[in-house]
Image: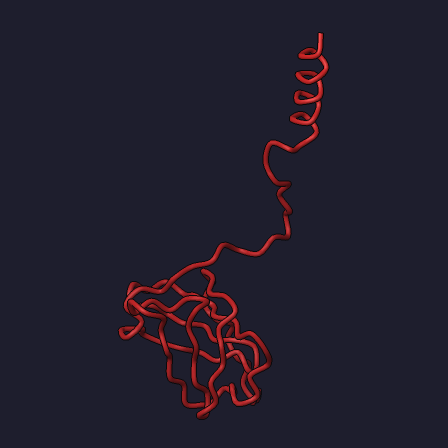
Length: 120
């Protein structure tokens, strides 16, 4: 007799939990890693927010910085500091105009938006 209420309580507890976490249609894209960062093809700054990076395989990525990186401008000299193993990911950093900016995330991206003529 004691076993029946325990089994019922266990079953009730198991059904109260969702089988998988709810998916949000507005969730962030999955994290990515750029292999062989020393051989990237192109980098386009997104001032104070991040950098679009075209990897050696032609794929575009977006690296978002943790905080506003005030020296990250369109004309800033960029230097990338990959994480151990040569990957560029959320454990990496970049230097913009000599300032070190930590990376918050790296995700797959489309190519950067084109600047309109006359836009600084």
